Length: 179
Image (cartoon, rainbow, N blue to C red):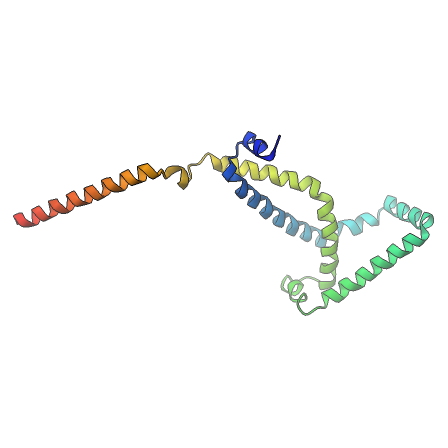
């Protein structure tokens, strides 16, 4: 089953697909901003790394793959230093200041959010598509301007309106002449 058949089965028309995609994209941005706020507030990946089992796993990795583990640890430390430099950049600094938040923590939460967002994408994306389909299908029951506009009917109505206006003008002229 293709995308078109799936959407038609869900009650969408072909012309509703671009609108549904815009809804999904808008919800994606909203989800990203909400997850950024959650990452700033709760620091989920940092908190997760402090739990018992992840700590044991990191210890196992450091013993088993010592060289690779130290390389990755150095990379992470360099990324943290870069995030501190980014937080001091003149173009980036006004954003956290406008939000009244710590610039260094904001840059770390942005990096954490990228990973968190990608990990939760298999859950959030189908949910966003489902919500968009439900919104569009409810809206699809309403009559749109294009549905109401029939070219032949529009021409007939405009001709009738012109005839009625001419008749009204003639009647007004006759009434004026009588007076």
